Picture 1: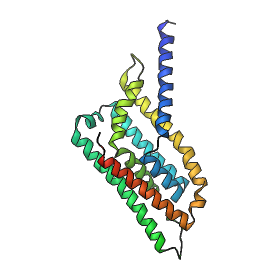
Picture 2 (picture 1 turned 90 degrees about the horizontal axis):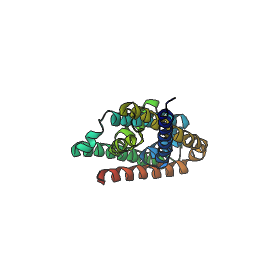
Picture 3 (picture 1 turned 180 degrees about the vertical axis):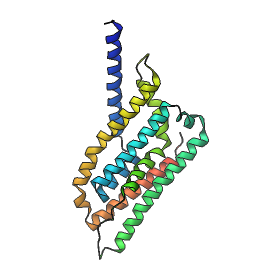
Picture 4 (picture 1 turned 60 degrees about the horizontal axis):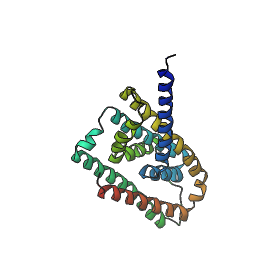
Length: 219
């Protein structure tokens, strides 16, 4: 076996382990996706939360593959493209937050006859997870600056960026699965009318605040 071969294998293993560790740290940082996923899991159930997670991971794959093929570089090259996507993403978050606040207000008016929240179609839950991620241009800028750092020296860039995109989504999925499970475990507490209303108010306010922050922030 050539001496360079074990050395190259060691570099590859080091790169992969470093990437997985960094991806876990990134997944642990709460953001818009965390707020949307946990709200969906608590309000409408664990299964709906898992579907939202799958939508979010699809968004991560989209940004990772876009970085691999150079498409997300357009966000860095074009201020108009970046700002346009930023405004769309902010609008999505504000709309979801306003909807949660409206549902909390409706719940206040109907406390005399409380009802469990209506089930959300899986397509809608998936779409919310996907749009929340894809409509955030910072995810695209992050992907193009983050993924290439871990490509092993001398290795083909494109295949490794694709591999890291899949690993990124897998790590993110592993992080959110126990969170959704825990949210499902405490769901019974949040089904009480007063508690559920407060949850909608808090989650709605958080989503609106995240949307406003995204709207006013620059790259």
